[in-house]
Image (cartoon, rainbow, N blue to C red):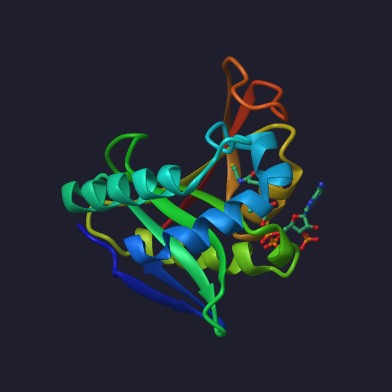
Length: 177
Ligand SMILES: CC(C)(COP(=O)(O)OP(=O)(O)OC[C@H]1O[C@@H](n2cnc3c(N)ncnc32)[C@H](O)[C@@H]1OP(=O)(O)O)[C@@H](O)C(=O)NCCC(=O)NCCS
């Protein structure tokens, strides 16, 4: 069970993370911190290249283990526009999609297109019959992406907030194959 290392989506390409993109990714995260840190606990003011290297190293290990498949997203000019990944942490038969967009590329429909495509890829993998997105109830942009990509709400889970924009109520959405 392994998705392709490279996936083309219109004018975007999703590529399995490589260490040589660490500087570019750090710049993308740092300039997007005001938006990212509202909902992503790892997006802190202290975020640096060492954090990106650690993320890429973990991504490489997890890809090899088959537990998580993380991709960088590039545009046709080779600029990094965001990141997306498939995670098996919700258990057998389901892959969860996580994502963030570099702020200067937000609002162009990029993440909706990437999610839509990665959902199709995931649902074509053996043993996968559903894909999920989990976002905080106050994350309207993530809710819009998930809804536009065909995900419908199946559950709500209360937990401790981990990032400043969170209410602590997660909405779980799913799309079935
Ligand atoms: C969620 C996120 C990835 C969306 O990326 P994007 O590339 O801008 O997504 P798209 O352009 O495909 O679609 C964005 C949609 O959100 C809507 N949106 C954006 N900000 C919004 C807001 N504050 N309130 C309501 N809707 C909002 C846009 O209008 C658009 O929907 P529309 O096409 O129906 O108008 C981006 O906002 C982000 O990185 N947020 C911070 C990290 C994060 O929350 N990740 C997800 C964790 S679950």
